[in-house]
Amino acid sequence: MNTRHPDHPSRTDAVPLRHISQLAGSNPADDRTDLEDRFGRRFAYLRLSITDVCNFRCEYCLPNGYQGKPTGFLHQSEIERLVSTFAELGIRKIRITGGEPLVRKDALEIIAHAAATPGIEKVALTTNAFNLADQAEKLKQAGLSAVNVSLDSLDPAGFERITGDKRHAKVMAGIDAALTAGIDTVKINTVLLAGLNDHELPDFMEFVRSRPISVRFIELMQTADNGDYFRKRHVSGGEVAEQLLAAGWSPIKRGETDGPAVEYAHPDYAGRIGLITPYAAGFCDGCNRLRVTARGGLRLCLFGNGTHDLRPLLQDDADRPALKQSIFDALFQKDVSHFLHKGDYGDTPNLASTGG
Image 1 (cartoon, rainbow, N blue to C red):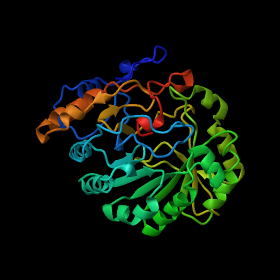
Image 2 (image 1 turned 30 degrees about the vertical axis):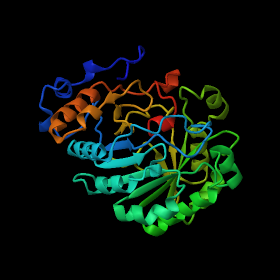
Image 3 (image 1 turned 90 degrees about the vertical axis):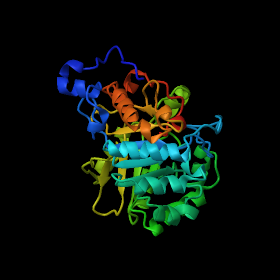
Image 4 (image 1 turned 90 degrees about the horizontal axis):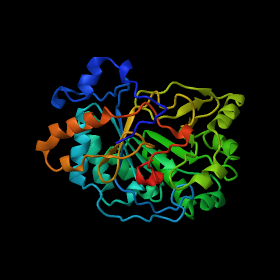
């Protein structure tokens, strides 16, 4: 489980005793239908990785390509039991992630089951879009309501430089296919990289002038294996925010099940520009999401330490009360924030390993 940082007390004294008793497991889990931590944060959003395999070699994540063992991932039946249990606990939005989730042959079936699960209002997918053009219509029919495409450059040469892949045209075709298929929300994730794509903000603005797409610029985050790269390529999201404000863009209110992006709108543009700035003060205050890894580990924070193994309780419906209690007990140990600003990035080796 997450360890507490010595400079950041747990703040238990500030939490009403009723929350402590509930979260510590004194009430039967079957009687509770909400996920709330000891700081009063409520969780309605689950990011579920279904594989840590990725077929791209993005230099900020997997510069040497996938090096793990592509085995041991949760089976479809385990995923279905996990999704329905979290739905009973108040999760309303599921994001299917990886690695690259569409390398799994049963990805469509997983998405369809999640979309049909009572209580789940939105099923989203994060993908590198290597075959989204072929899958977009099927994904829409399966019940997918949102797709986020990883696209780190609008320039084919820049794309290949960053991702190690030549399929820029297929990714762009996938974005168009998602719009044509009528998927409700289409977004682009772009990791800000000094000297590689930080000059492309005007191009991305122009890209969303007539497209109802949200482009979210993500600050590069330090992990266990990218220290030198981080110091060379990190760009503060604040620099982009200043440019957006100067160009007449305005921040808009964040929804209850939205991710951490602060989005900006402009009356002359159909799309939006968003910023995900994990080093900004107060970034964790509105945390509303939990993560489960492809092998069934509950992670309370992307940059925490350790996982809480849920897999033993995913084998039989009879284990559901114990599974719920295990989730509540784990949530009680969630820290008030990550500690990236102190150089503590937990035990995350790379973003592909935890679903990002």
